[in-house]
Image (cartoon, rainbow, N blue to C red; front, side, top):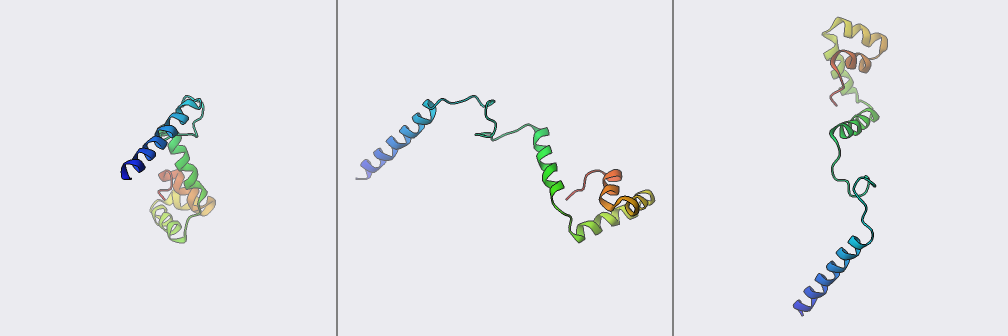
Length: 97
């Protein structure tokens, strides 16, 4: 009985694999959304930047940026005029969280 069950499962797996292959497989470049496990480094960093920019900073994160920016007078003055995030990015680069 075990042999019959294993034989049936193997035959179903073989049918599934051959039906996917004969269904007209497209080259990877034609449909990047299907089966794309890897992407270029600059594409990945753009996605990460978009997700970082989409979320709001908590009060603790904003205070952390302000503490860093307070040590630099120009950054502190810019934070008062244009906001802490803009000042931090201008002087220290992208926000780390």
